[in-house]
Image (tube, rainbow, N blue to C red; front, side, top):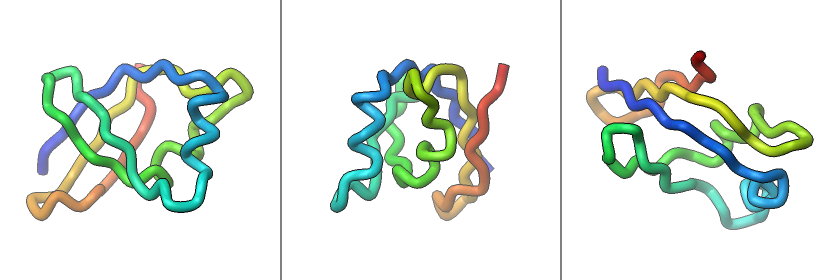
Length: 73
């Protein structure tokens, strides 16, 4: 399994794109500098009235399938 860490700071307005038809994934840059494509559905639960803010960890299997995406301190 591989893990990636992200620091996200998105406004609510930017988060609206996560709900648009045809937007199935987002491209994020991990703290390691790697670019990772993530299904937008993984970000939606973290949308609040001020957007999405915080540090997150993504765990993927050896086949690059999402195992977990969670907020970390």
